[in-house]
Length: 367
Ligand SMILES: [Zn+2]
Image (cartoon, rainbow, N blue to C red; front, side, top):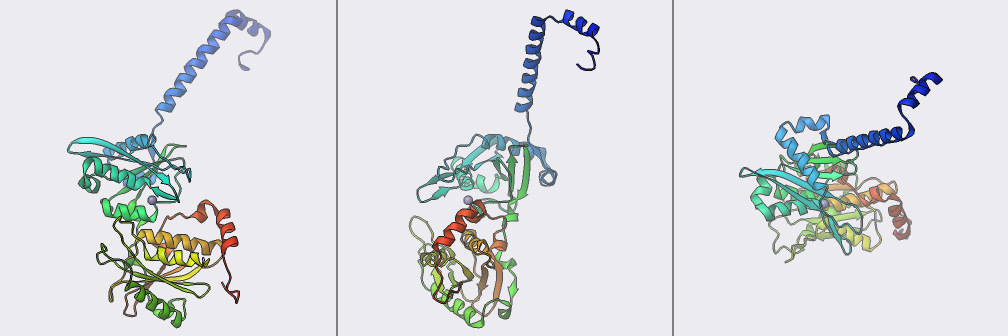
């Protein structure tokens, strides 16, 4: 306007051309067209793969399936009335020449417990199309998220995806609402097999020979117990050494409802009961001569425990595997559960305050 109205003559000409009422009508018309264009642009706002994601999703059909799944996930129902953290998931796949889209969402209850979005979704696929579809037809899980951060599935959901899907080829797609970018990664990025835990000589483990021996014996004794009515060959024993020099031990326990109690979870719960929150090391042992497995759910318990250490400036918990014949593998829960999340990450001040008000020092003041 500044450019066109350079003098009064021009202004008078403009006013003759547009009297006030016609100007108002024109203004309303322009605004209407503008808002219509914006609405169309919004409804057509397309998902787009990031450059890295394009390398993992090269088929146009798979790309469209991911985008359709994200649109469906946006409408997935959830009930996270404790955490208020919604996790909306979906997948899309073709089975017998027919396209399907299935959704899942998290729900929470009581103490707190939760049904997470991943098992919700995969169980939904199984219920509708069979376990074979979950294993062979599902190629990705898409998450509709306000922000795509660095966190991946919790340990238990990793166990479930390993068991139920073609996890070697499974993709994880996170659709970020704010800019419609889609970040695709491999599910296997979340997995670290025990055989990749470094083998280490006993002398290199940052414990005295006496403490290491105590841990091995405690874990082996623990493994003699537990409840193994349904557990096939995966029974392990765990022992933890706390910074107060206490040893805790536990074995796995199954039950008819299949609410398995895990050994690392067991030792950490015993220690927490004694207000002993900082573990120096946790050792796992299985059948003699074999390397024990450590479930991802148990790694989650260990990771949360290690986050307490980090909250107060202590080193992470050392995770040690023993084959019962004097050989060891050593790592940390941080390395064994990549892209993990913990309460300390969500609520650092609450965890700090909790530890300050709950931890006990021993009589010598050591921790
Ligand atoms: Zn989960």
